[in-house]
Image (tube, rainbow, N blue to C red):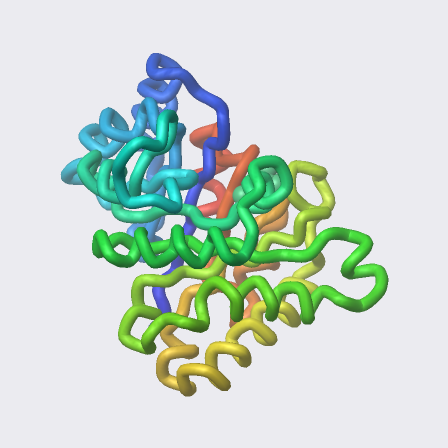
Length: 249
Ligand code: PGA
């Protein structure tokens, strides 16, 4: 059985008091224990949230890390520092990082390596822009993102990778990929991993969907054979919506 995962990416929302309230609300929800739940708050709340979640089924992650391991890089936060907060996951290549902060496939390859070196898991995001889909280039774009940042890895390390397919046109827009569009791309992605690493590795890879996922559409998205959960933005900022998505499995 593949891991079922729902991760909440809080983005640049929630100061420390707000984070504390939200995690307390989430911990009170009745949630499906078969699903791995990951909270991904801003760096400033990460150690506190990790501590609050100790002893629960909920794990934590960071939204980004530096492409350097340590040293004179003012303002950067390394994968190793994130690991010391108790977090176990780092999102790599979110489309907002790609669009606004220059994270390209080469930089994301460096970041992925640093995450894996700490023993943490990378939630690697990929996805096309609307004009790329409109001209039928979505498969090509996703293949390039994955092959240039992930496919240098040895097969043994793929157990530390989770893929999140997030069509950029669906993120924060209220437009969701249809269940068919999600399944088609997830199947394509699993096929890429089958070609590169073999069927067994590809079959154990969790591929999450992200982009305007809500309690009302999660069930039909998660019902697809190759959709193993979600990376949730907006709806993860509300404890009962987030629980509703988790319980859609
Ligand atoms: P959204 O964001 O759920 O608000 O569309 C998803 C994401 O960016 O991970």
